[in-house]
Image 1 (tube, rainbow, N blue to C red):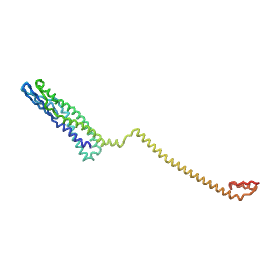
Image 2: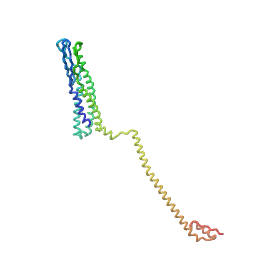
Image 3: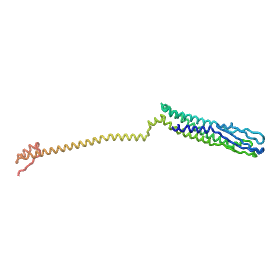
Length: 302
């Protein structure tokens, strides 16, 4: 979406400022022999084939002029830069139409994001190469159209009696702006690679099945082990509490049963006291009823 908004604008600014440039240079030659001032106008423009730019310079010794040409051909870098800008602008408009009106077809079968990703990477590289070439060519253009270099081409300026000077120099602000917009497009299209990559199936697949590091695997195994140990410890504790409670309950029942048996024996003892006899027969009865009547009371004779 960032490319949809800004890419067409910066692409237009890049190729318009370069392709629509027009430079003007003016030098003045004062011939000492003829006492005549001659102004020479030199015009050049895109695509900067300077070897085809010619101008007429006076020959102060004779009444005639010479035809001179500037030096250098920088059309390849300039045309390459403008071509990349034009195609980037057209693709940006096409991408805008697809994003707005054909979003479903764009995402169908993941073909649209993959094509968009590949084209974005290509344009990023093209912008980088063309901007670097154009910046280098712009430096050479400035050197070739420098008034000092142009005056060295004029034969009359090589004579010390004649005076030569530059009255008007070209303005480079527009071409400097085009180079800046070129590198801005490099940053814009390179940054847009990430946003286009997020729409592809490669990013979605990597996000759906993330790779875990060794430390992450160890931590997950430790959590699973702790979870399994806690799940096994819970039934054992409950079983131990249950068994302890049941044992305590059975022990209490046993104590109650013992107390009940003791009370029964005591009642039997109290009930058998009136039936005791004094004398030796008591011992005999006692011996016969020890197992059936429980504890007995022995009375010694005086």
